[in-house]
Length: 477
Image 1 (tube, rainbow, N blue to C red):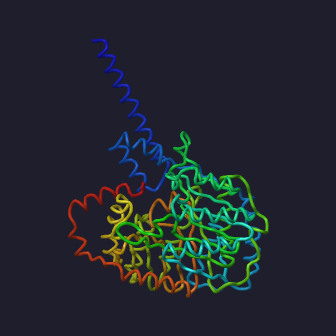
Image 2 (cartoon, rainbow, N blue to C red):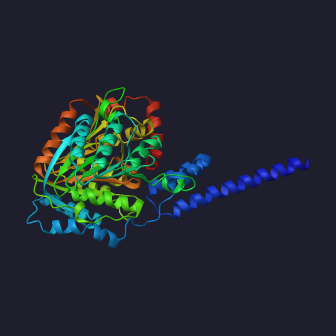
């Protein structure tokens, strides 16, 4: 009898302690003063899924301490040469309507706009990887690569072998990859590069017990810098599926090669991330060489991260949407918009702006795709046109507006990109680049179905319920 009593007392004590921890966690979430939508999402998870919710909060919910990746003094040293080149520009022709956006990125993000750039856009992995390899072989001083995924497959090994060749020739090669994005990659893949003199770092290594503080904040950037004069930025990783596609079709993505002073922005982003992981600051002139005018594009490299005070790219996109006069087109693989972005899109459409959003009809992540679908009805109610890409999976992160504004980068239209990931986008403020990206969007549109409210309302109740339930968790996905 005593054993039973003590067993019951022990069980009751465990329950009391456990629920005290859950209630304390809910209290902490409330006091964190986050976005109310996200706060309510965490409370729902903790209340209805106490065990799973608590584990998820420990690993994914806690905020990082708001600290800079690099000191102000160190950043000033890093940007000294780009700033001098920016100030030396005789004139910078940008659309008057976008001047506030440019100023916002300059003030909040430190992103410097540069004219005289040449932009080459890639819409498939074959052309991007082919050109990337050509530029890598032309390198004479340094190569800097930063990718969320650097896979040990045919594409990854091809690029790795090129880097090894260049390292043997005396070119300084640095590789930064995300630890979670490359979880499945065998360590020997990177060790082969290390043995050849290539410096390889893993961004925010996820190891227990430090696991809980880092797993939620990932480096989603995809950038390359060659000799400080040529750069690549966009949505493509180094993996075979970006070339061969998926079982149900092509893998449609967008990437860009930049030639001109805008490369300074990519170099600054890479060297800042490198410093954050290695505590080595590179500021010498070799990394920021003199660059002649290469084209007519005006470009601004903008980054965002979870440790800053502001959500730079998200806030900039809200400004861009609100300043649109005729149209605003978006390609994104995932659509879980923050309340600010959702309201901006609806307001623009309601005011008569031609707002179009292109999503994949079938996506690679079922849960996020279901959450994305839950937003479509209210978008269409406001007059937003929804296009579902049918030829395969569209992973492109492309936006274009009014023939004078466009952007390509790694940022998805979702909470994770806006608040948790380290992202990088190139923003363009010239007619030629905007028209080129507009033509790409319209060409992709021919491979889409235009969703109508009549058709959308006919989907099954099972799908509607699933989408609505997943939407409750969308701020956490």
